[in-house]
Length: 111
Image (tube, rainbow, N blue to C red; front, side, top):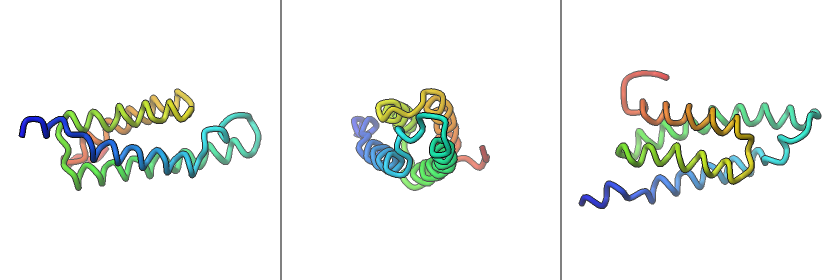
C-alpha cells in the first residue's frame, strides 16, 4: 500500500507518449537555423506547448496523482525534452508552466 505512493508507471507512460508525439510533430532539428522553416517550427512548438499543458491537466484530473507523482511529471518531461535536444530556454519555461498546471489541476483555480 505504501509503495503504491511511489508507483509512477502511469506517469512515465503519459510523459513518454507526449514527448514522442511532440518529437514527431515538431522535430528538434527543425528549430535550428534562422530561416522560414525554423520560424514555422517555433510556431508549431508554441501551439504544442499549450496542447501539452492541456493534456497534462486532463491527465492529472483523470488519474489523481499524488504529490510525488505530480513532481515526477514535470521532472521527467523536462529531462525527456532536454534529451530530445529541444532548446534549454523552451524546456525550462515549459517545465515551470507544467509544474504550475499540474499542481493546480485539481483545484478550482485557473492558471
